[in-house]
Amino acid sequence: MKKKRMFSVFGVISLLTLALLVLATGAPSQPAKGKPVVIGNLGCFTGTSATPNPWMLNAAELACNEFGWKVAGREIKLVSEDSASDPTVAADKARKLLEADKADAFIGPLPAAAAVPVAALLKPVGIPHISIMEFMPHLLATGDHVFAHTGTHRGTGFFVGTYAHDVLGYKTATVIHDDIIFAEEFTQGAMDGFVSRGGKIIQRQRTPMITMDYAPYLTAMKQADCVMFWFVTIHAVQFINQYSQYGFKMPLVQGGCTTLGVQNLVELGDKVLNLVSCSSYDAYVKGEEVKKWVDRWVKLHGHKAEKEGRYPYYTEGTSMYVATSILLQAIESTKGDTTPAALREALKKGKFKTPWGPVSFSDKRVGIGNAYIMKVIKEGNTYTRTDAYKYENVVRDEPAKAKDVAPKM
Image (cartoon, rainbow, N blue to C red; front, side, top):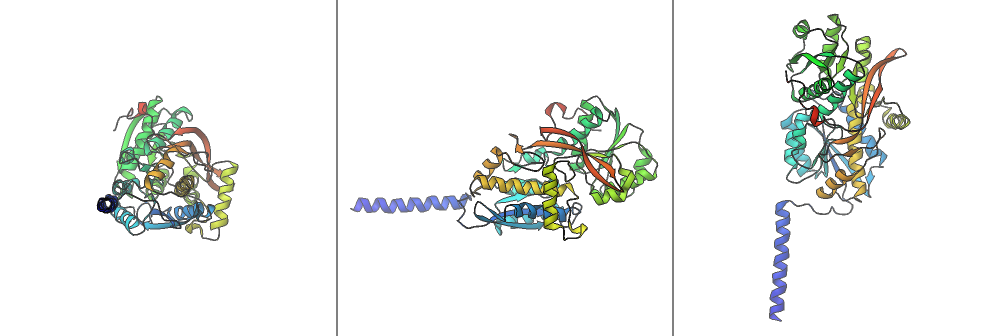
């Protein structure tokens, strides 16, 4: 009897020790029944990337609304914090979402540079971290908890550069962009796509983020078949206005995703006519499923003012919708299990439905799906975008064989 009692005590002590070890290492446990699913959204209410924020918030709400604000029997709780487009602020807000809000998954932030410390913070616990827009390969390399459904900056740029050469027939390009890492990546991908098909880059100009007068760069701009550029919204508008004032006629190619909302297109008018860019998702892609999606958006948010995002004018909104929907579909597939390992596995293996076609992930956690070349057109008395070309079911990344074929001028 004494031996049996000693064994029982030893067993209890062993179990307690194991439990303490689990808690000490931060290993996650199965969420309690009825606990809400918490999605941490690192928005950008302020800072250089703040313009499309209302559209991103509305997009996330639309995705949650489509699930009835419940997934696998658990309430959906969307908690948004302002990353202020700043890496330090983003890390602080991510820590709050992790420790105070107990977020099960993270989306964002914008810009991608602000996501770097967030990915590092989440690595020890392995909580899934999904992009709004494109991520950089070195960010994906942080760990297998990082997912880029929209792809990489270079991948988006690559398709634009390829299209500019193969379809539009341009043979030479002059390049200008914001002197910031993700602008560098977008345009390097576009240059690589262009050069890999036989094009030639004759000039590259980098402009400081404080630039508001592009006169010196326009004066120095060399003649080519097209101008490849990439700027954040406020800089893009200023550059295009001055480009027109200087009388340039070279076609404009946005070497990555568009940063211009439809309001910007209307304001710029003929100055942006036929401008091309690339997008994984866009409200102006032709198709019945996209039209139905837009109708759902307007039904939910149509009472709001334009500046509050009543209509999906910005591609950041469509991408935010897909990020939220992918997470919810993954949680549905796990039957509500949001432990990091289970959710990561569901994301890696899943094939997710979107109005723009199915999306899955490569072994490097880069999105696989359609890439649309979007062109600015005049429709009646206004200006809008339409899909001019589709790269179907592609890995949204720059192919290894094309990487850095264009010189880093």
